[in-house]
Structure formats: structure tokens, C-alpha cells
Length: 219
Figure 1 (cartoon, rainbow, N blue to C red):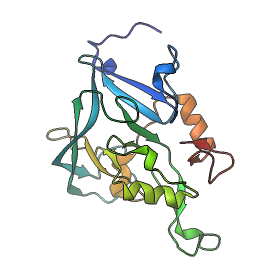
Figure 2: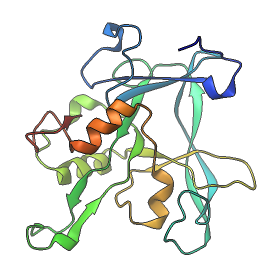
Figure 3: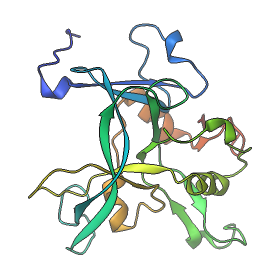
């Protein structure tokens, strides 16, 4: 592997990842690649990607690849928080304010989904911002449904790009997406950056500290 070149636009951002509860200061060179908690840093100015808190508008275009498959063509104005580059201060560790969330399945029927399997819903993989969330307030999560509720109660937002290719390219933060089959949720879909981590999280459901699944990838 060659040296990083900050003049190359493809190498501008450095993404370092760590398991929740593991101080990134303890990571050794080359090992900051796994874990669901991440820092996204601009190498050119040592600033971190964060939620600006500024409400802006962009466009969702359903014919934008790769989010268009199976969707009716439409263009819809959307609003959300603009992302910005700021000092690395937010998160449980400085700048570590992003959760690289895999897809997980939950039940939308209060009576359960043992019978009503049609009420099982899967979230899209997404990159969620927890910079303004105190992780120590996280309750004892015992189910995927409680995890969803926790995201909603804490107004967790995820990166959203709907393909506004004909004007300013605006990357937004919008409320955590709940259903990957919803066409309007397709722009939340995020690629996993590390192949090893991706292979792990597709073979094991996500969980909080092995609580609601005995064999899972702990958040």
C-alpha cells in the first residue's frame, strides 16, 4: 500500500473506525478499520465531518442510480441538516460521531411477528450521526424494536444523498431510515468501507452488547 496523497481528491478523507467502548487512542497503525463507531477527517485541514445543525433543502430524484431500481420516477424536494467540516470535538471520543450501521430487521406489529411475518421490516445500511447524543443514556436494549425507538427518541440523523446532480451537490442528514424497501429511503444506503467488517455484519445481526441476539455483532 502506497503513501496517502492529500492532493488526490479520492484520498482527501480519512475514516478511522473503532468498536464502541474502545478508545481509538489505543489503536495501532493499520488497525483503525473495523468497528461501528467512526471518525471522518479531512486530511487537508484536520477538520471532521459533522452535523452543522443548519437546515437546508436538496432534491430526491428517483431516477438517480443506484437508488432507482423498482421506483417510480419522481423528483421531490427534501430538507435536512447540512454537513460541515469543524473541529473534532463531538462524539464519545473527539470526532468519533458516526455509526456505520448495518441493515437489521425489526417487527412493526405490537402483537409480534411470529405469525405476522409480513410486518417484518429491514432498515437500509446507513451512516448515522450521534455527535449530539450521549451514549451513556442508552438504555438496556433488549430488542431491535427498542433500538429503533432509541434512535427515534434521540433524533438520530443519517447521511442522505438523493442525486441532485443538476445543481449543487448537497449531502444531508435526515431522520434515521426505517425501511429499505421505501424508495424515498434508498438515498440512505451507504457502502461499508471495510470489506472484512462488511462480511462480518452481513453474517451476524447487529445488537447492543449481545443482548437481543446471542450471536451478533455488538454495537
